[in-house]
Each structure stands twice: as C-alpha cells, then as structure tokens.
Length: 230
Image (cartoon, one colour):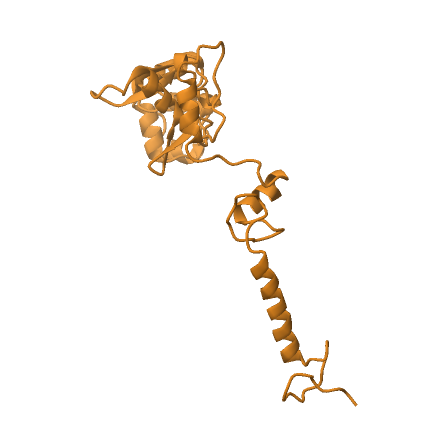
C-alpha cells in the first residue's frame, strides 16, 4: 500500500520527500526561489546586475563566454573619446591604429549621438578644426591607410571628395573597376563592349555579358569605366 502525501489534508500518493507530485513541485520551487533570493547579484565585485548564468549577469556572462574572463573585452563609455584626446598630439613614426571598433570597410569607427561616424573625422577636427563649410569634405589620409584604421593626427587633412578620390588613385586604394566588390565586368570585357559598338544592338550585347542595357549604354557613352584606356 502506497503512502499518502504528508501535507495536511492531502491524501494523494507521495513520490518524494513524503510529498505528492503537486506539493513536491511547490516545495522544490520555494527552495529554489529562496536560494535565488539570497544570492541575486552578479559575482563580479561592484556589479549590481541580476545573476543570469554561472553567477554572472548577462553582460559579464557574455564576456566570460567570449573571452574566458568576465572582465575582459568591451569598451567603457567615453573611453574612445578619451583616447582621441590623449593622442591628438601624437608625433610618432608610422600610422596610429585605432584600437576600438571599425566600419565594415576597415575604417576606424566612433559613435556620436548614437550614430556611427569615422574616428578619423573626429581626430581631423581636433587637429585641423572643423571642415570648411563651402562643401562636403573628407578626412583624407596622407598615408593611404584609412582602411587600416589609421587615425594619426599628422596623416589627416580636410579634402574635397574629388581630391580624396585622386589621393586614393595615387595610393592605389580606390575601389573602382574590378576592385569593387560588386563588379560584374572585367576590364577586358569592358574593352570588348566598346569594340562591339555599332555592330550589335546594346540589348544583344547586354544579354551576352549578363548586364543590363543601361550599363552597356553608359560604357558606350563614356560614363562608366571612363578612366579605362583601350
């Protein structure tokens, strides 16, 4: 004959610790809740975050899982700006590499008003003042290593978009033609398309090379790939 639950007024069969399924689950929950109440804060000293896993809050657990240390990684608020202030008078040889986040193209990334901006622009403004107001200006790199996150104050100057593009040509860091990640034609194919002008309809040429008719038209009119010599 099975024993009954020891809870007052309950005659259900017991399953563990003298309690039925219902009362055992209630007891178990109350014990776990009591334990959690006693130890709710993150194990990291000074952190008031609620424990999430392994005794750490969400943030410190993520760092622990990513770096093996709950205090490793991450950037504190204001740290990038303080770094810029500290290095605005830097005069060392070689490039000065930004130690924080980067844009998808490798350029140094800073944040302002919740929006990503180029850290090189921030540094350029600190050293050379704000950009001229008579047009759109880029923070041009004399070293040509903006995509390597260089923010050396002596390597930066304000330049128009056209001037900056010419600089990129000189540094061989431009992304036109086959260097562009989205290119569909090779230089050889562009030259062939030029030679086919007048012999076939643009629609036929476009279909053969797998591009739109507008692309062929722009090549024939010297708009696209204008810089490529025959």
